[in-house]
Image (cartoon, rainbow over all chains, first blue to last red; front, side, top):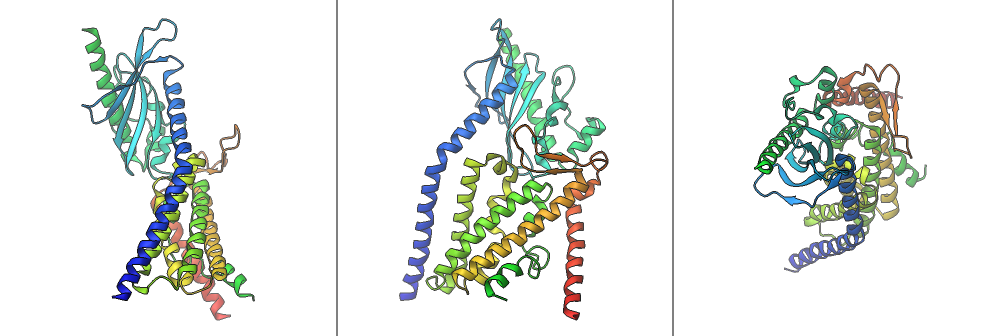
Length: 189
Length: 209
């Protein structure tokens, strides 16, 4: 009985002390982490908006790939130029989130990767500069490549070994394009 | 030779965790695609290994034998979570590039292995030297594998970005036509196999002498 209590007490003590230290470190780092995430999102919004005006965020609840969107307004005329979508999907290592801007017809203007848990050196190549170039200008007249065979040889090499990441990003962007086309139709009526 | 120095040096060559004891294979094969990832992983492991070895060595007489493994895991996972939060807050680039392998340090066999085999049976000073030697041995092995894999498999060597410099050194010829299999998981296994063979050959030679 004595051993039983000693065992429970030691394990309880170790867990409590570990928990207390983690609370302390969390208090020190949480503000900084929040600030990092905020700056990262703002930087990505600036990149995909090309310095145009951005409206307030509109939450989307009925779409599994799209979290929210912003209206993109021309910085000179303030007319609707397109949309910025916050997209989410599942990659090889977990959730991938993107910010993508589309013109009103559903063509992709720019894509920025916000977060991912892909394998370093394999799926994480999606973070590399130029990875998203293959999607730019596609969505309406030219279809978004959903399959590796629809890519040029250099692009094929770039995604080889990380097809699941590529397919996931393509599907998200394609759904985004459909969503924007529907938004455009709604706005016309 | 002094015991402390012996404890430190054994982790680098004689009992190298990667090439001789073959512990921590999962992160070894996964993060060695880029030099910077391997180095960051190594530093993370040294941090966790050092602190967990110190704490486990201090508490070794207090922890009942029947619950020693859960206690070690709680201690190790607390340090890994602290490391994760610190990286997320102060080194976000490293945090992003290590991805899922950072929390997986919890189940890195080297850390639990050294806690069970060394720290729980030795004093604090010996445990510190053991952790530093093993951690350094792991970091050096990872860095070496990643240098070869990245240079031949991708034609680049990725270091920390400094100012406007992206931190990527491009190797002429190899950059245009890399031997891509080395950058892929199969190449990692192939390379590890050759390295294991080399270390076995060297140790058998040493035994004959």
